[in-house]
Length: 136
Image 1 (cartoon, rainbow, N blue to C red):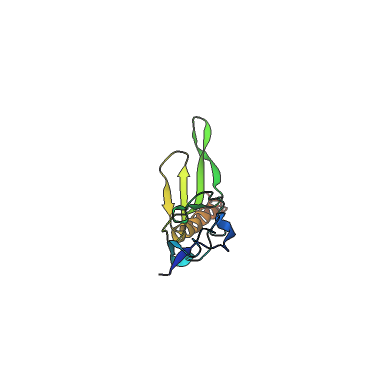
Image 2 (image 1 turned 60 degrees about the horizontal axis):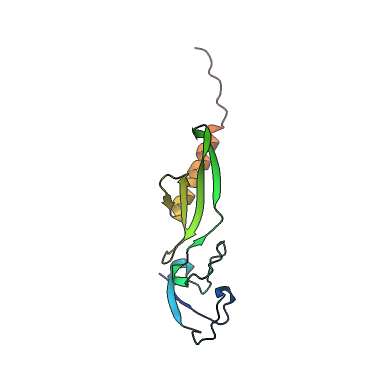
């Protein structure tokens, strides 16, 4: 597994901090796995990370929402929330699924791809024309 140090750098403008106090090059944490890089955020991260230490950053993509009309609650559709998140020390991002305030489901990228392919397959089956049955 790849493991790379996160170093403060006066050349890293994304930190938004004054590093002229002699902290240039100081190791402040580690990133491991395929996301080990000197970048402060994955390219999909939408967070500003103002005043957050690098070792405590949680990266999030845009949160997506899907209205679920098939299972209304009090006459209103429930909402399925989807998010991509990478937390401190995680080797890869996780997909979070949650219906309103119910328990959160966390999927690995491989699990999310597999579930997505199954959902697309099931939806395709559901719209297939069923040949009419001939009377016996």
